[in-house]
Image (cartoon, rainbow, N blue to C red; front, side, top):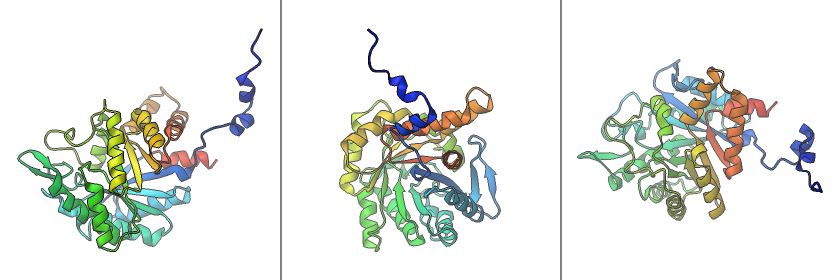
Length: 323
């Protein structure tokens, strides 16, 4: 006897598929990463990330306004400074590119949520995420630099800070620094489970942050490890993280799901540069349907449990979702 249950009944038309859809993606789910650099009138294409640019402050303001007009509620800023040194002093310069961009964007689009990446790698001459001595990235001396950077972003008007360095104890250090300077209202979105991934290559091109020696495996997480992610997330929540992030997203959907299931805090996921560029390259070759693959990837990240998605696809996806 043929089974009574016929799941295809609920797939017969687009209308009924929409009615029973379990995962709903909207522009409100997106955080748009932007790269701000020094100069004026600069909009330099990033070769390995088609559609993305290094932009001077005046240009990044226009891009931020366009994103907001599409219904994207938030951006995250990465800086490419004019000057780099051993301790990344441009990261906490009150007149640094990120600090100036925050002020300009807030003036132009006050309702847009501005998140800032807090890390040293874009600002150090050696390209690592902290203080280096004798070829080793030192944890505790780096914390003071991260505190200075986070406070400088808050003073410039940032709405949220996002430490991405993976130093132990940095969430607590930043929380204490923000609180002591009168910024107890500023949330921290921690890159809690950030893996030493090969999918970051195009970003390092965009942010000019490739390490000058070695790699970041001594402080970023080992990709085969799953349970360790829960430990990292738990520690960051204990230290005061308001939102926790899994990075990358697409190859770590199991981690996103684990974090969502085990912790009662908002979960962010970073759809990273390599994931973006693979889609762009395959689409340029005519091997895939760009828009359908893009949307399927973003839905999969949300379905896994992400409450918000950092993605370079944000404007393109928002246009499709807006109809």
